[in-house]
Length: 160
Image (cartoon, rainbow, N blue to C red; front, side):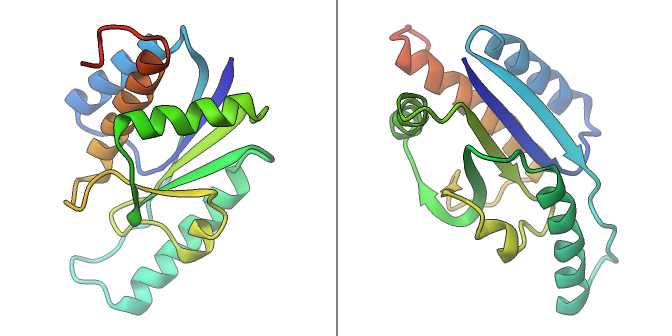
């Protein structure tokens, strides 16, 4: 059974996001040991300068790197990442398992993404879409895609 960790910057405040995450976390218990770690998002003014954004990303990076499990694969969600189909994500996760990689960590940044320092630690930079989504929704989308990946591996009717 794979150990999956999702390191997220920011806490879910909206009940509908939390409910959706809870549902997918429950479904995933059959396939993996899932740990979800929420890290604080740095507060910024409405129109922050580039320097303020960089400083916030650096502070968030410190927190991410401190909590990053040792060993295993690291997947960073970022807009410039590689887009994968659901089948390709499923294949990547299956490959990690067959290569003996029991720990896979997914990283979701806050409103301004992830620091380049964090992205450099990633084995895979993954783009969910060329569109922009709230980072809280990205968490729900990631959990659903992980669940779908396991469903594909198991040949269920969930993935049509």
